[in-house]
Image 1 (spheres, rainbow, N blue to C red):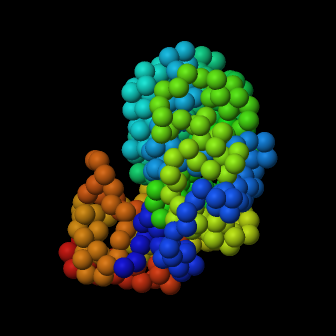
Image 2 (cartoon, helix red, strand yellow; image 1 turned 30 degrees about the horizontal axis):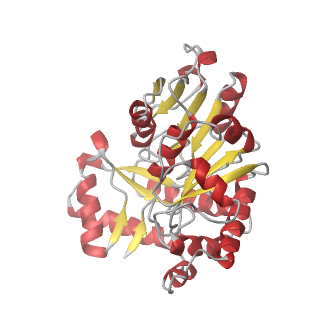
Length: 354
């Protein structure tokens, strides 16, 4: 089996070895030390010198729900970038928790620019919510632009960086980001099931700490209080935290991880285009490349790779399900893996006489 998927990703041998061992009991000083070491390293990678991180045992969607439900209420007014499946998820959460919002809809093939904001009264919004890499399309939004808009209009900037973290330029301090959401199964290349909410102290104190409790398991305040002793209020994903601890030791710098991913993305994109494959013309995250498959045969390509070779790429949902597959550049992948993938993709193209 070979994974060219955005999550779970192809895992590193060291991570697989860590995950194969017996789990320890976790309510101990030794395990707390591991959690606190992980927190310290994540803060370094995010450039979050003055902040806190909550470890959520759940998918990225659980972390998204935790942020929306704990940080905002009916007195707020959110501006949400809706460019696909995951932007729409922020919308659903605002609806469920009855938080007023407006959306900026980015259609497939459209690039988010300043023009999308020019007819809005930006001063009325308390927060801007964005999936910085809309994973369903691969579009990478301009964090510099969004940071400028949020800062000039006194909006909190809430960023789902789940696919973009360690793959693209990202820095909480530099871009004045109040809250970042990341997960274990993307560029960290760990097992799914652990997510992280990184908060500036100012955002935590003013938007979360004294808010009425809306939920139990996803209560950020309880997680932050417990993190002071290196623990979580509920049973954590012990094995994934151990994987995280091992993986973080092998990450020398944020910039180094981005450079590696960017190199793979550029290599694959040139290779794909040299072999006649079409790539959408909008800003792309280094994390993945969407490939347009001719004659609406994307599902057939996905099934062929899976059934004949045990190769998994990301299919696409919704109206583009028959047109696009997505190829990841995160996890334990090398240039020669893409050479092999392209040749096998060409087999199915020839087989179907596209």
